[in-house]
Image 1 (tube, rainbow, N blue to C red):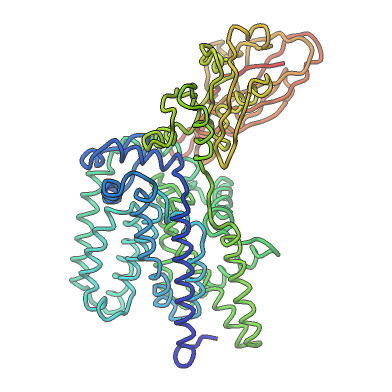
Image 2 (cartoon, one colour):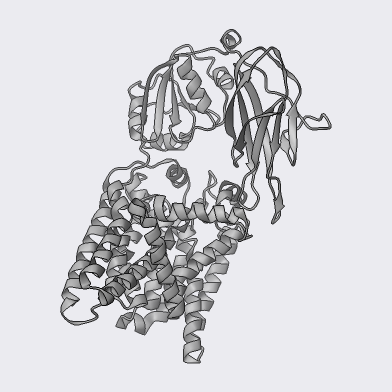
Amino acid sequence: MEIKTSKYYNLFRILFIVILIAGLSLRFYQYLMGRSLWEDECHLALNFIRYGYKRLMLPLDAIQAAPVFWILSVKTFAKVFGYRAYALRATTFIASILTFPLFYYIILELTKSRVAALIGFFIFSVNLAVIYFSSELKPYGVDVSVYLLLAFLTLSQHKYIGKNRRLLLGIAGCLCILFSSVTFIILFCIACYMFLSWYKQKKINVGDILVLAAWAIIFTLNYFLFIYDHPSTADQRLLYSFAFCPVNIFSNEFIYFIKVRIEEIFFTMLLYISKACGFAYMLLFIFTVAIINLIVKKRYSLILFTCLPVLLHLALSALRLYPFWFRLILYLVPCFITIMAWGTFLIADFLFRKLHFVVGFTFLITCCLFFVEESISKFPLWPREIKPALNFVNKYGSGIHVYMLDPDHAYRYYSYLGYVKDSVYQDVPWTIKPGDFYGLTGKEESNYLLFYSTIYQWGYGEVLLDLKRRNLVENSLEYNGYGVMEVKPFRDTMLNSIYNYFDPAVITDNANETVAAIWGGYIASKPIFLNKGMYNINVTSRGTPAIGVFPHNNIFINGNKIGDFVSPNINHQSTFSFDQKQDTTIIIKIDMNNDTIANGEDRNTFIINIDIRK
């Protein structure tokens, strides 16, 4: 099926140009569509607004971190063109479109197959994750560009590159270290490629040694100047604790971790491959064929540039140095696509040779459709959009009070741009109970606005439900991730007559000491008298994981289990219904049934609050 010369060359060239134009068009459309910044981008945007070049080289606000040259480049675009989305996203976008065509040549050099190169280039050109992150104020799109650039400079047989390869690799590698946090993984793979070349030639290349030395010097300087002992490290590790690979590869935790990551990578967050008609099994077969071929045929170059980066990132994840999560491993998309393209080509070529050209071609086209159908159908990706909610606020002018639950950084950013008329607002704690919320807003004499997220509500979702239950919502808007309510005032002095509200249960251990942590075993409340009736028991908790798994807890009333819950690394509320059959006292007991200590991590549950409502 592979035509390496002759009459099909022009067809391959035309297909390459068509795919290139399609991929560039999709990227420009996503960039120019007018999508607003969302909270994570706004965290960074506010740093660029507040600080000059020198201050931006120090740790950033809001637990943010990014490679230093990327930060300085974004700041430069913003100073020249203003702090709007197009300018802030320009660095990542320009890097993405300039390096996008290189992927075709990388696969071509690795596989020596124009068909495989076109398959991979087609999948990559329409991949939704790569397109989306090519125009976001985050460095993940640059990570992909760094992989493409460095792999191309290493593998390309172009005359100019071949003549100046070491100089180009030396300069590009040093710059990329300062532009991307994953560069060192890619450079390690290239170093292995150099070592393999030395082994084949039975000779150590002095030029390669100089390149490796330059990389090592820049990496060391970058590490100690901008990474070592970074104040955000502990918070980031806690935030991404779910994305650290368990060390024990024979454990249930490891199996669960890999299962979740496979779902994210291939079907929901990165590659967007369709599962229709059981294609997930065909995908497994394609990968199996490709990897067996790599090993049996000793295709070391393919292994070094596809499998090795994935294994290295998993190892770093197990060491709790770099989380293995979809946007943090975006640069691995070319690795996965290369393997997919190679496996698809091998099977199609086999069907062509053993059966008929039509059979092989049909298989190839069918696989390509399953590879890209989800990406095409979901394009453009526009997960959150704040401007309709801001327009809703603007209708009220500048005289109404605004309370901000979650998207406060986004609101502050658009206030700076002048998009928001009412720039005076009050932050509300992300985890807050209705009683505390009414106490906070009790001074209001007239209607006020409550701005919130429709996606991340576990800290304050009960407040929104209670406002609706009391018919305090006068008007509201919810759109694409954000919501605003016009709320009538309600005073906390009214709570005693309206709320049937119990104080938080006192949690004691077996020594009758007031505690909030389940270090192991269980904790139990003191006796609580309840009248007959239906009740909701709300447990607010958080937990610390061990080997990537969070504490699992059971809740009992007088020894009878009424439910279970997992405590994540942020405050989370779990609600359980309970039918009190008679007027009597109850004892609430919560036990953690997966307590362990592993790799220096202690899995614990922390009970923040328990309240009981009729």
